[in-house]
Image (cartoon, rainbow, N blue to C red; front, side, top):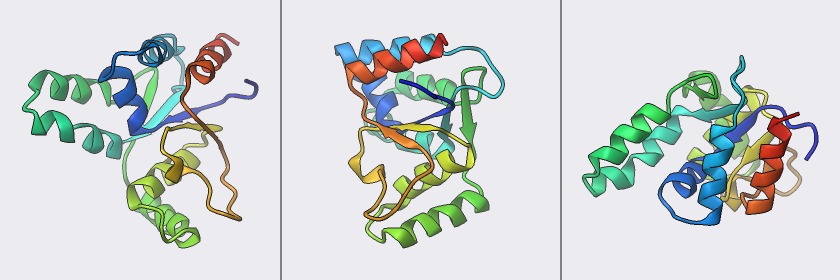
Amino acid sequence: MENVGRVYIDTNIFIAGFETRSGLAERIAMLFSSAPIQTPPRFVTSELTLGELLVRPYCNHDTALIDFYDSLISSSSWLEVRPVTREVLSAAASCRACDPARKLPDAVHIATADLAGCSHLLSADKGIGPAQGESLPFSRLQPDEQTIEELIESLGR
């Protein structure tokens, strides 16, 4: 995988990495742990991600997972957590205008990735890709074991 700059991480990647047990989950954990310490951080997500991640732990009264996500989804040397600002919401509305069927949370993720200058967006959500005739300024990556391995390798370059 070439020309990997900043990578936007969708909510479902965190869920796959920390709430499942699989080869993919292990690779996602490796991806995050091998992220270089740099400014700006290589990985980006939105504060919206935290709101999406906490639903199931709150339903299940899982305070350990609530605390884990609250700690994990904060800006650090490996992850930039971007706020949902008026600029993001305006860009999300423009994104939805291209595809009115697109859900607002997906549009917020797309807008945040765009405004953060991401070259790639890692997501299992097919609704987060470009609408017909739409071009997005980043490549959408499907999270499979091979893609995650290639991302890990690209971090070393």
